[in-house]
Amino acid sequence: MSRLIYFYTKESLEKVSVNPEKFSKVLKKAVKNLLPYEMEHLENWLNFYTKKKPELKPCLIHIKK
Image (cartoon, rainbow, N blue to C red; front, side, top):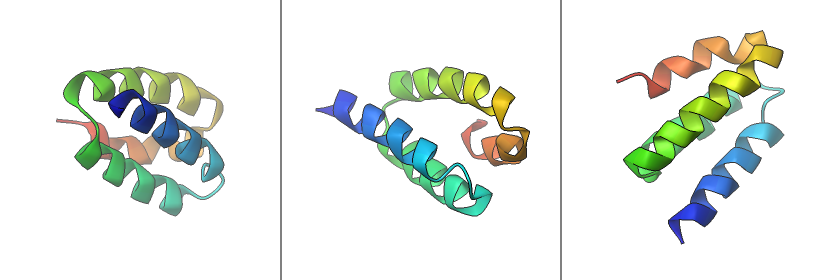
């Protein structure tokens, strides 16, 4: 079940990636809902994904510990 949440979160982030404010909001929710190992996977994916979209880099402060 939790794996589905991870994939749903990725899809949601991709859909709202045109708006950094919405992207940040979805990312904050993900930090609250995902398990620690899922957050590691999401962080790796985000680092890869934001290379193509540098305007989203500032949103990554929400995943820093």
